[in-house]
Image 1: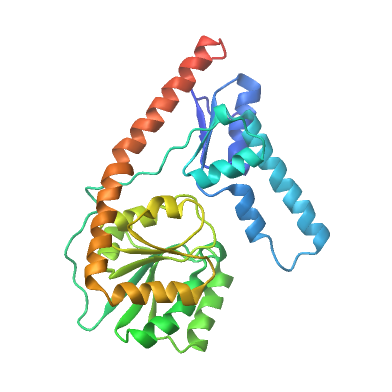
Image 2 (image 1 turned 120 degrees about the horizontal axis):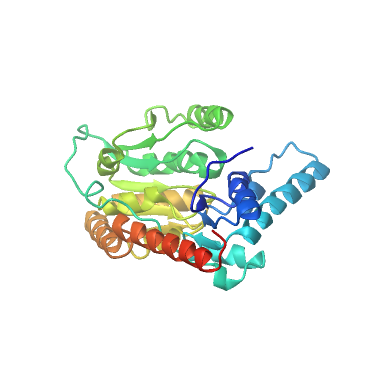
Length: 308
């Protein structure tokens, strides 16, 4: 297959999508870069289907490991979005000289504190996530039973597309089982996430796996206090601007949300810290400048070595 010519190929994961870059690197010497948001191999380990037999699981994990290893080997540079990912890459034997961490960045002029209409008597808890197993929406649904029992006005608003219909049906059954029909709303995708974030009294990220989630830093840029699970680079993102809890621990997640909802001063202080932290470390401008520099360095080096 004749892939389009380019000065550089850049994959968003050390996954199947990166094999085009690998082919062009082998065939033409075209520079190849990999950004790792979530660690592909780790997420496939978490996502491997429970109904598989042990031999099937071993087969698929070896395939995923091989795909990851090929991407790492041929990449000129690997750019994880957080230090957590670096540890996994080094476990695969990637030389440290090939790794350069670049944090994600957001548009702080779009994602900023703003006044939005919220229904009287409603105190929104907002999650912005795809509906799928790794995002662990069940975690926050289960937490809502405790949150609602302590904060009667609390309502969970989940924004985002349904990526896994079977998992979505499981979430709906859990809502019915816990009798949370009035407490949990699936809002679907939104073209105005900045408005959704600004509805939140508390923003929640309940995932089993993350890289360096845009949703968390977008919510921080909007001045919202964060409750998030301690996965991937979440702790690096949140810093002192929120509360980090273990994954798959709905009671601890709920207790953190209730603590913030009962303390307005703390919510305002954490929201202020979050906005300041994003302005200092996670702006879109800084993010773009770092990638532009890496592109120029990589292409210049390849041309100096006569590879282009």
